[in-house]
Image 1 (cartoon, rainbow, N blue to C red):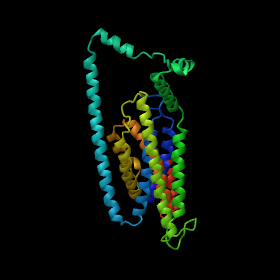
Image 2: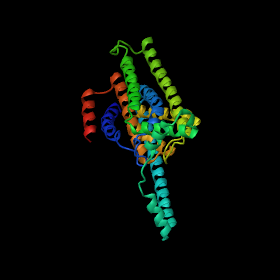
Image 3: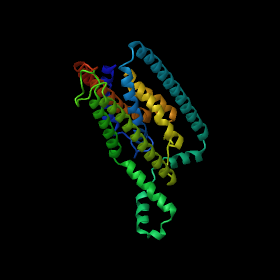
Length: 326
C-alpha cells in the first residue's frame, strides 16, 4: 500500500500540471477545477488521510484487503450507475431539442440568433458606472459592479487557491515528519519518539490545524456563495450550491473519503469521484477536481508512510517516475 500511494503521487503531478490550465466547458473564463469546492473539502480530506495512515499501520493485512474489495466495488458500481443516468439524460435532452425544433423557419431563425456571438458590453458598462457620482449609483449598479469583480477574479490564474492549498499541505507534511512514528527506538528527524508525550502532542496539533483550516474554509466559502447570490451571479449546470447544510456536511463525507484513501492506499479520486458526481458536478469538472485533490492526499499519505519507515525508497522512487511517464 505505501508503494501504491507513492506511484499515485507521480501520476497526480502530471495531471495537475495539465489540468490547472484548462477551462470550464461552459464558462470559458473559469478554470476547469472547482477551486472553491477544493478549498472546502481539502482540510477534512487530509485529516482523513492522517487517520487512515495511522489505522493502516496497526491493522492486519486481511482486514485491509477485504475493505479494499468492498470500497472499490461500491465505487465502481456508483460510477457506472451515474454514467448510465447521465447518458440517458443526454439522449432525452437531444431528442427533446430535435422535437422542439421541427421544420419551422422561425425556429431556424431563433437557433441562428442564439449562435451569434454578441459583443460584450461589460467593460463599457463599468466605465459608465465609474463616471457617475456615488449618489447616482443605486443597488442594481452596485450588484453589477460586484458581479463584474467576481468575473474578473475568476478570469485570473487561481494563485490564492493554489497558495492556500500548498501552504496547508506543507504544514501537514512538516508535522508528519516531526511526528515520525517508526518505533520507540527510532526518533523522527526532530527527535520525537513514538509513545512519548511529544508524539501525542504533534498528532493532536495535526488534527487541530485541520479543524481550524476547515472552519476558515467553511466561513469563506459560505460568504462567497452569499455574495454571488446577492449580485445575481450566473450559476451553470454542475455548480455546487453551498447552502448552510451542505457547507456543514460535505467536509464530514470527505473526511471518510480521505480516511479510506490513506487506509487503503488508493487515490482519493476513486472515492471522491462518485461522490462529486452525486453532488451534480459534470463529469469533466468532477474528474479535474478529484485529480487536483488526489495530488494533496497522496502526497500527505506518502510522507506519513515514509516517516513510519514503511516505504522502500528505491522502489518508491522508481514507481514515482514510472507513474509520471505513464
